Amino acid sequence: MGEDTNPISVILVSSGSRGNKLLFRYPFQRHQEQQGEHTRPPRSPYALHSTAEVAEDQDGDSRFSDVILATILATKSDMCGKKFELKIDNVRFVGHPTLLQHPLGFQGSKLDPSPKREMPTMILFNLVFALRANADPSVIGCMHTLSRRMAVVLQHEERRCQYLSREAKLMLAIQDEVAAVSDGNGSQSPFHHILPKCKLASDLKEAFDSLCTTGVVHLHINNWLELSFCLPHKIHRPGPDYNPPDCIERSLKGIRPYHALLLLDEEKSLLDQLPVDSSPALVRVVKTTSAMKNLQQLAQDADLALLQVFQLAAHLVYWGKAIVIYPLCENNFYMLSPEANICVFSPQSEQFSQQFPGNSLTSLLSKFSLPTTLSQFKNPLAPPVQEAQLVQMVIWLLQRRLLIQLHTYVCLMVPPCEREREREPAAPARPQENPATGRPGARSLSAPNAISFGSPTSSDDMTLTSPSMDNSSAELPPGTDSPLNRRMTESLLASLSEHERKAIQNIPAAQNPEDLRMLARSSLRAGAVSPSLPRRLLQYFRGRHHLEEMMYNENMRRSMLLMLIDKFRSVLVLRNHEDPIISVFQSPFV
Image 1 (spheres, rainbow, N blue to C red):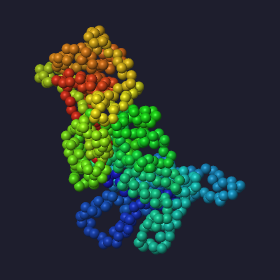
Image 2 (cartoon, helix red, strand yellow):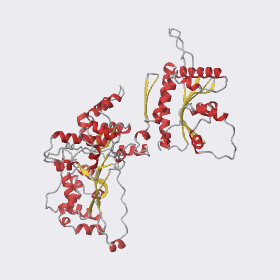
Image 3 (cartoon, rainbow, N blue to C red):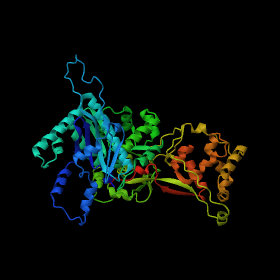
Image 4 (tube, rainbow, N blue to C red):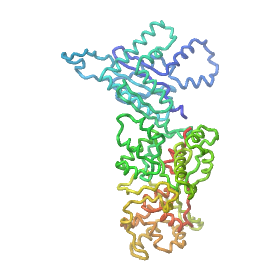
């Protein structure tokens, strides 16, 4: 699947007073192979094609000569400024034709002592990427975006200093020179001589090679303008397949304040990769971020708005410089990734031994064969240095995607009743609330404590509550049975099926109105009296929301939520699995 995202070639064509010209194409080694094919004796038309020949025919635009490519890719002026896409057999050409519009009076005034620049003979140009015909539409869109960005940069440099015209004249001159020397033998491609002498040709080669390897393109066109591009199919590739950009965007939209940002590179290395004119806010986020600090606290420490931190975090994740995790704390469940490399003599084992002398990677990974919380590593007699080293080792494993984090989900499961099942139709499925959509006026939350095994409050360290939690509580005094309380309780039970209501009413905890009102606690605090509002709380017990999300949405402490689950444990089932929002970034690379 990785080669499906690689372009076949990059082609630069122009149209002007000299007609349609193919200025450069890369790779150009296939041109020689194609010349050798013509020298072979003709085969029988009844002979079968080998697998290698079929694969070579599928890959290539080499069967198209330079004249044919220049004719079909140099479009009319009416198509400039629009997406260009052409499919011929097994090849799809994607580009963005650009018209070179020069203002009047381009030659300068008579008083200008500088040499007068001649009007360029080039009318338009088209930078085209050749792809496979069955390429994914998202790959086609990304290649068009890169072609459009490079076209904008070249158009700007052409208007500023005629950069494209100079490079085109150099390319055409070398082509004419090679054609005159070779005398039509076709022994060597003219693009082989253009590459070391033309800056634009070397930039196109570098862009092609980067797309086929890392997926990250960094160019300085004319040593003046910087161009950066990221192919997410190459960066976010958790295995033999790749994550499409729409899946990545959905996950990025689902980032919440209780998430954390984990950098995949060292801070100094990441800062060195940033451009000179990078945003100061981005630098502050890189310097302030920590795996034990949620985005809310990160925004406070960096003195930035939470929305801006979300945008910067999404930017780093999209470029493959960071991943989204849940802040490290002793209640987190971690498990060995099913795709992790557990070989004893793997390169990662050597890197781990060099960074953490005296520790074995396989020995550490064996402790996470089953879902394990970090609290199980608690040792009251261990020095603080050992606990800090454990945190760094867990961070190292998360950066290499060797561990996955599991979250606890709650499901309402009552014993089946055949009589009720035949009497009542199945309850209609309620639409799932999209976690990616943010709520207006989201609460601020306190940061989780750093992993501290000796903390006396470690059993409730992941409190995701706002600082005004105590003031915002609007619960009624215990033991009161006001009409509002009765109405909320009746509304809560009315949203359930008859069988579920009977099962809940048979639980001893349901005899206490306080426990039932606890399910509708957030609606009571907000002063809501609408009978339909508590119904949305039932989705928490449908297995679609983990405990940390419940704590944030309902402004509850972990201990209170676990107490509620324990009271209704006869009808509530707990299960652990990955968070679908961040699971996209937790699979290891290959």
